[in-house]
Length: 320
Image (cartoon, rainbow, N blue to C red; front, side):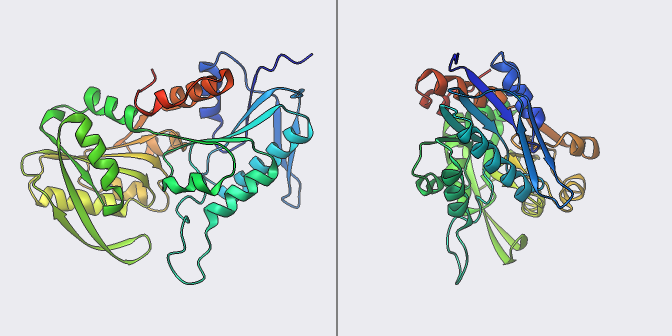
């Protein structure tokens, strides 16, 4: 007989985060085996009943993104055909989030395609964190809870950055100005902006600083760091303009390509990322990396969703 309890399932993208979330909820991960046939087809086996249960599938958009996305879709569909009462896809980092608009001729809007795929597979609800563009929520015909890392970032700044009251919040591009000004307002600090000119994607040619950072601790804030070329150049620009130290705080630390070399050789004092994407191995190679744990926020969102409580409390409060 069903108890309509929480069932936490995890794919292969971020098992460490899934275990932390399950531990905070006082439950175990469901018995799931995700493997590949010799022809690289993904095979999924759910080793226990999910009939009439409240199922949460945790899969982040990182690493081998296409394989992990396919795993998620098959897991959702397997739970749907196994008569789960409700299926929630928990995507700490939403895959293809940067392809959210038609910015040039014949460009695909891949984030919309991912939304369609999740819906067709059978997801009833989506929980994610710091979407690259908030309008991605509108790509779904299902409820989407876009959680914010901002409360956790604010707590980290207050507790871990010495002399933070003499700091200035800096956005490395115009697109992140809203995020940076929100953090600056909460901390009652000044705000600066860096304008960057790109030659091509992932390659910045020139940076111009708007604002005064002289003799201040500069805190760069962004939603995603991929190759970290922007952060490295931004740190150099800020130090050249008189900043006493430069920290970078990023929600999704993709850290691909030569990112670790860029960080190690840069003028950045520390680069802080959340664990929406696994980076335990990268921390061994880069002593400047630090982590904000967001498992508590995701676990609380799952608990509140299961109990039918409001999730909006989490938008402005850090969960311990």
